[in-house]
Image: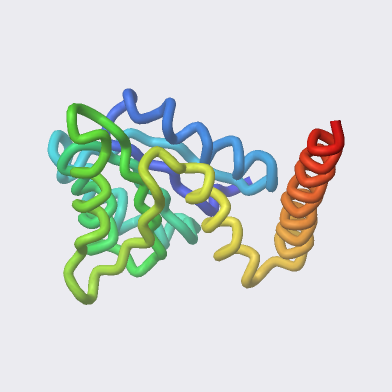
Length: 165
């Protein structure tokens, strides 16, 4: 099946963080591809990748980056596809530098920004975007949400039981 979501990152050291998005897309049976595309080390490759993404059938791009974290914004400047940025925690600033780099995009170059190291939510947002045109994904998302609600109800029951003891 042709990938509809791209998961890209600045280096292979980001893969551990980006696994949350991979696992989420697999859970929802969304076809995806994973690539290392560095804004700083391979800018021409990044430009080609981003500008050809839509033509290859991709519908959403999830981009993880640490430090200066230019990858999500640069990719967003080169495509009209939705780009979801995942700040990756590196160094002494604990991901704050990455978060602010991805958040503070100029007007006209939107990037949906997740919490630091939270690629799972990036995967879920990609699924929600795709669900706009997929009844199957909408049903799966409804089931996922119900599952989250059930977990909270069960946790409250456990608390109630704990309080009685």
